[in-house]
Length: 345
Image (cartoon, rainbow, N blue to C red; front, side, top):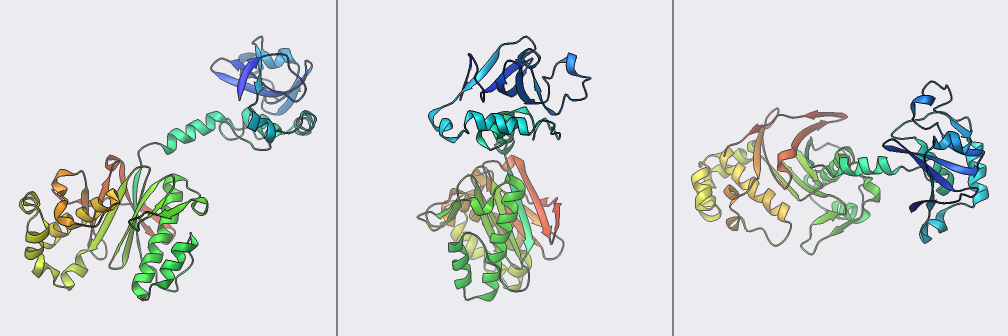
């Protein structure tokens, strides 16, 4: 769509610049331009009808500025209504109220008259800037008891249902259900319209955003971001219960780099901090096979935290937007911003 000063015809979408903004309307004739509200100029400030759909003459609409009309592209011409229908719809809405400068303004009005869809370039640009801001949100929730529900997409739902281990199946379902909630809450994603696919490495990914999943003990974690992200959690309680700490020395010797052995003491929480960072970093990279010895997390920006309140859990996150990290806990309908203790180093 282009805007040019030109002779106007009935049904044309027109606009005029008033200060730093544009005011839009539907041209019918020099004596009738239908718009949602009057131009935002001082002389109309006290008029009671200034925020209603109304018809004015071209002089009132333009306030002495040049009127431009929309010149549509070929694809836009195919989508637009006929001039007679545009005029009919615009006139039918005269007297409407409910003006909102962000969500229901004069540009929304003219687009709805012409194309049948209310949209505004200013709102869309503001939304784009908002959604493109650095986001790295992690949500943690307990695995709910009871039957497994249905998740989207169907291919993932089938995978979860084919899992024969009841506890693992419940955790996978909880992870994916939490992903749907997190992506909508943090990124305004319409989850069931999102295109999901598997990479050649077997990892599920989504168009438009990145995510990572993890589960341990009775909890699941989901990280969502506009850029690459990886998350991993481990239960300190479960780790100690398995007496895995007795083998940390062997695991450290085999899988930790010299830098990591120097940085992380041979104790359960430091061990889990380093290990989950490796897992999170691998998930963020998203390719190849997990080779913990090849990842030196002392050289990354991955961060780990200790979550308390119930069983102790170590959470690690690796992300391009790690500086914007927020951690939320989810209990039923309650979502709370957590303040986990960062584990050094």
